[in-house]
Amino acid sequence: MKKTKLHIEVLTKYLLEKQDKEQNVMIDKIIPNDEKSRKEFEAYLQVWEKSAHVSDFEKVDVEEDWTKVRSRMAFLPRSKRIPLKSYALRIAAILILALGLTYFLTQVLNKSEIYNPEYYEIASADGIREVELPDGSVASLNKSSKLFRNSDFGKSNRDVILEGETFFKVSENKDLPFKIHSMNSTVEVLGTSFNVKTDTDLIVVSVMTGKVAFYLNEDNKNRLELNPENSGTLNIKTGILKQQESFDPNLIAWYTKEFVFKNIPLNDVCDIIADYYELELLKDEDLQINEAITITCSTQSIHHVLRSINLSLKQNVELVATEKNLIIRKQ
Image (cartoon, rainbow, N blue to C red; front, side, top):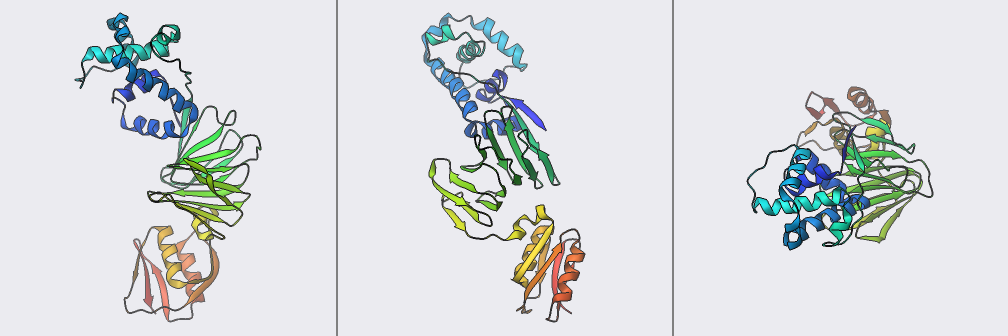
């Protein structure tokens, strides 16, 4: 678990475009989705922008403040698009705010409330990872997924930022809703179990137990109220929310470790299996398949899955897996 803090060094580097790529991504995820951090960042940004045009900052001891900031940040000066003196004045203004000298600063700028939470990153890398959050909720991250939470989680908020796919078992707390932020949407619950999958174009929420609210950040009145076995989708490009009364349990087979096929066409079954095991599906163009499958089996071994399916087939076809392919062929 990684952690970072929205302290003065990080924010000043961000404004100077000196931040490293990983921390830049962290800041870009945190600021839009965390109200306290957003207020903090807006306060610094206001100081940064306004101080570029305020003559009173000529009274600041620029060299001394610049030395302090540079020593705290431990980075070398670079060529800048605006004069160094202007940057030094603006950094001095931020330093004054960060050091708590608000009386001086409020003579020039509006007073702002500053807050510095720590942020934790939970990443699953190449495998599934299960973690218990401070409030007792459990998050199971599918591979290549990330969660971000701050140090106030479970105290003043239960907000997380999601990248990828995670199954949540949320402990009940009627006074503190659990919220998952992803891109331009929010999923809000009190206590339930559900799956959230995000990608570039679509967010899919699938509910197993309890009740889930799913909405756009800019319009939380236009929301989906999802009950058990319901699913909801958000098209990122169009902003359109859609609700379905049921969802395919195989969408969370990575979590349940089980395939459930109930009268599913064989072609669709093959698509699901190939996608799960990350195989390319190959089939003879002239091969016509008009058969549906009803079977439940463990995902632990693809060879066990294919053996179970092949035994249930009535047509003269079979499924075979190689290292990179899932093949549908005639027997």
